[in-house]
Image: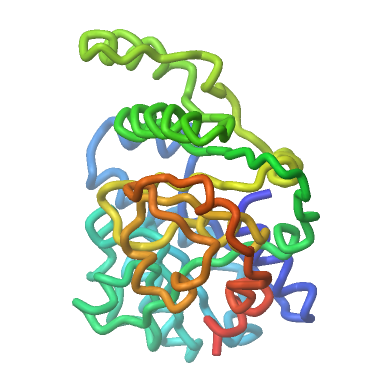
Length: 303
């Protein structure tokens, strides 16, 4: 289940009527037009949104929550604003990766997970969330700790995680690595990295998406969750809050976490720090990020 569906279900469970529209037209028609020209894509987007909105009575709704929304045309935002709806934007990507500045004037509230973007542009700083199922995971009581990494493939990330695995081995911590890579990318990166002396090990790779249920099951068997953030972002990852929400030790390279109030507790260890066995034996704080649980998070965002 995707994060958008989780947000929708959380609101519906609280009695809120929801209409969810997908702004990312992943289909054959869009892919076809994308190969022709940018102007054709924009025309396609306008037509797509026209048909989405033409039979919707906007007077039945009070709030527009746009998450990312890179494919929403300005004309659509004008129409929603003119209907008197409360306009809220949430960004779980940085401006460097997805420039949304041309849209912000149509929103009464703009929130972002990226602290640097919030400082620079005066947006609300609003880190990500975790689903309540993570908080329900039983705590592992085994004496020997084990580490888990789940993430998408990036060449630098892959090399970093393998290096980290060897460092953890030195303090007798076994590490499981599961990296998602599309099958058609595998051979490209296999040969590209081979020239750099890096070998792609298929034992660490996944060629299909891992399900939410499978992630929850994995979390029950591990004490340490590894987070290797994208080098081009300063916001905290979803994995950060999922790990802490599950009351696990978070092992991360994301320096931005040092600015958070909850960093002072013993659940967080920086990857660039020297590893001592006692670092992983400190007492785990429970419910460290409870205000980031989805039910609490979504209503704070909408308020």
